[in-house]
Amino acid sequence: MFRKLGFIFLLHTLLVACTHQRFSWNPDDYTVSSGDTLYSIAWRYEIDPDDLARWNHLSPPYMIYPGDRLHTKESDALEDDRLRAVEEQQQKHRPTEVTVRRGDTLYSLSQDNDISVARLAAINGLKEPYVINPGQVLTLVGQLVVKPVETSVRASTQNTVRQATAQQVRQQAVNTEESVVETDRTVSWQWPAEGKLLARFNKNDTKGIDIAGGEGQSVRAASSGKVVYSGNGLISYGNLIIIKHSRSYLSAYAHNKKLLVKEGEMVKAGQKIAELGKTDVEKPKLHFEIRKNGKPVDPLGYLPRS
Image (cartoon, rainbow, N blue to C red; front, side, top):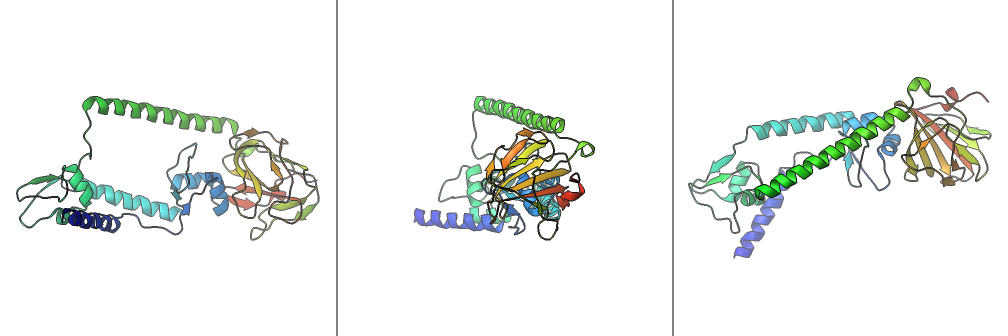
């Protein structure tokens, strides 16, 4: 009997959790995969990385993990923020306790007060079959587990230290990036490889230029900056490197045979960063792109005339 009641309450808990989910699944959101970085995702969607970070409340060094869901549209982020604000406002006006009346059950009280059966029971120290009596006062808010004062103080101190350390790491990352990445005015460009121009910029197709070359030929950084992506997780780009040069400008080097620099590494203009190859294409070539505020621009408008 008790087992059956326990199963019923567990089923109700799951149904309530689903019913009261605040934020619906958004098909426009992106699920982070292994190897992704904020910059590779921004590149995929042609979004300014700073905007993508802001929409998702991310701070340097922009740590993301497989399974995370990221907004790829500002409108979705604004709607999410609005729903959170409504939720917080509702929380402020909710009662903190309720008195059991004749005919009440833990399930009916959980429904009336928008709290799961399991949480309501845990807060009030109730065990199956969750017997409650008229006149009994139940708490609607509180901690699930009460810890000794010393443990709580120690945990609080440790959390404070961890938060302070995390803040220092974030600030150090911001300071480092600001000190090494050039301003838009100081970015100067040079050709990333020697060879015949195979394809010109077309924002609906190539979104950059293609340069012919032999396998193993040197691929060089078109300007100084920080490597923000080094991998092969973007479809049709093969082995790819993305470099951040300033707050506005990124450059990309695709189809490489071998990548010679890692994410987070600083590179100088003209430094060899890869070996030309043919990953994801039939013949060896370098596909080169420049993005300004997340949008593709014609590299020939920036590179010196050869």
